[in-house]
Length: 122
Length: 108
Image (cartoon, rainbow over the protein chains, first blue to last red):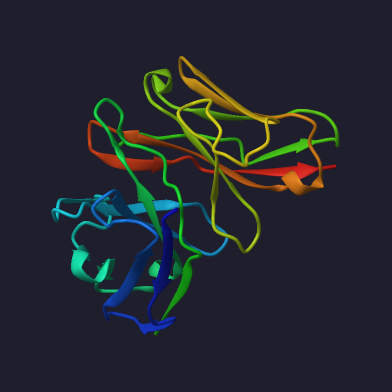
C-alpha cells in the first residue's frame, strides 16, 4: 500500500517561494499520478495540480502562473513550488495518489499524506 | 470551470440516515468520489466511482449519482460520523480536479 509523507518549512515569508516535497513509499512512483491539494484554515479543499512520472503536468488555472510540480523518480518523491506568496496561500498542503481512467480522467485521490501546515508571514 | 455545490450543513439524529447532496451540471455523466474529513485530520476516501466503497469503509456509507445530483447516504448515523464531507470529480474538459464546497454533518 502506497504511503505519502509531506515535508517542508512551516513558515515562509510573503513574496517568497514555498517548496514542499512528498515522499512516496510502499509502491513504485511510476504506478500512479501524483497530486497536490490545499486547504486554507476553516475552508474547503482546493486542487493544485498533478504530475506523472513522465513529467506530464497540469495545474489549477487560478494558480498556474505561480506553480511548478516536479518529480524525481530516482528518489521516489515529487515536489511543489509556489511562488509570490501572500497570506491567502496559508493552508494545509496535502499530497495524494491517483490513477487515470481512459473515460473519466484521473480517479479518486487515495491515499493522502497527513498534510503540512504552511503559514505565510508578512 | 466546473462547479460542485453542497449544502453547508446537515443535521441528523443518531440512528437515522444522513443524505448529503452534490450538485453539478450533468454530474450523472461523471464519476463522483466522496471524502470524510474529521477535525485536524486528512481527508479519507469513503465512496468512489459513485457508489463503490474502499476496503474498511462500513456498508452504512453508500452513494448514488444521476442527472444533476450525486448523493452520499450514511445510514444508522452515530457520533463518529460527525465530520466534513466533500464530493469530487475530474473535469475531463479541462483535465482538472474539482471539489465540492463541503458539508458539515452534525449528529444531534
